[in-house]
Image (tube, rainbow, N blue to C red; front, top):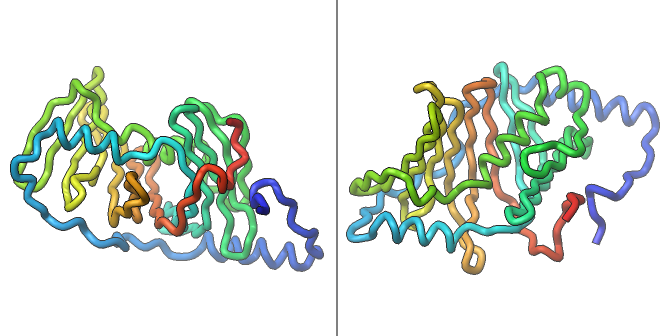
Length: 247
């Protein structure tokens, strides 16, 4: 199986390469789209389901190691960058790696990080003009896939259709909202000194074996003023991993 992260594409003539970069530039000038392109979860009464049972189910449903193929839309300054992304996550090894390609097959950015520290990165020039995209996106991909189970010591508020877990560390407050038919994580938000830093919403869950995978994800980063919209296309087993991250 060809690994798209390590395989070397054939060399293109200068004119073709210039054409591809022109396509990337056009993508960067595409107008952004503010609506959420996913179905909202159904309001399903929790009934007698306890907060402890919801948390325990979240532990059982959350995959620890996986590779996924996504479509990604990065929106900032009213512009949108569209990409096909290969994401590899290993929570036990504390690693994340992502490769993002444009619809024309041009590599937009790539990073490999462990423990929140980036060990390798690449970003195309046109995208780099939007700022330190790789560092911000790497942190947000970690926020999306890691820490989806609330800590034991969380404060709990159970409502008719949702169960909210809130944890505080000094001035930082993180809130987890569970609900829907699967009693799964619907939203995760973080505030500092009362101001929202970022929020992640999860939609259209799909079950693969005993694990749940969100079919749609929207992350809004209020600190950096951008939004990521991620749509799941495929899930890979470990032996089909497309990542080059160090195991």
